[in-house]
Amino acid sequence: MCTSFRLTRNKLKLFIYKLISPGWTWTKLAGDNGTNPKPQGAWTAEETVLYMLDKVRGGEFYVLVPDNETKRELDQLRIMWAAGDVAEGRPPLSRWDKDHKPLYDEYVKEGMAALDN
Image 1: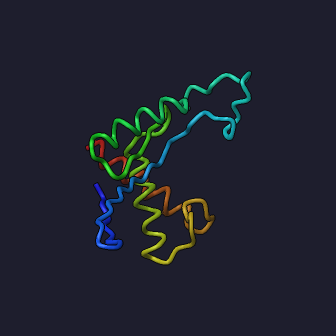
Image 2: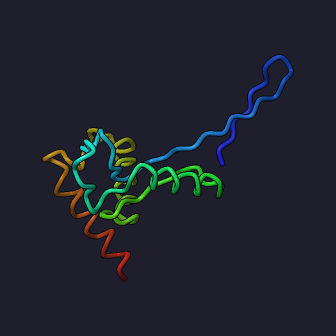
């Protein structure tokens, strides 16, 4: 758990921070107008919140909420690639950039193959 302490007028205050990254969540923002059926790959908002609460109660700081389409390992590879965008000076979200997409695709292919071995 990431904990931050701050002294204010001789009082110790404790702040607890968590980072949640939800997968595909079926909400009005994603197209749920009350009549559209929920796509197979999406999670409901309730499923997402319950999963997050379970992980937070377990002491996890980073909570990657899955969906029914993307493997956790793929999410992890995407996160590592995005960190590389920062560290290596690539453009933000370079996995969609035409000049970087082939390299990203190869990175994911090799990463997923390594997990299968």
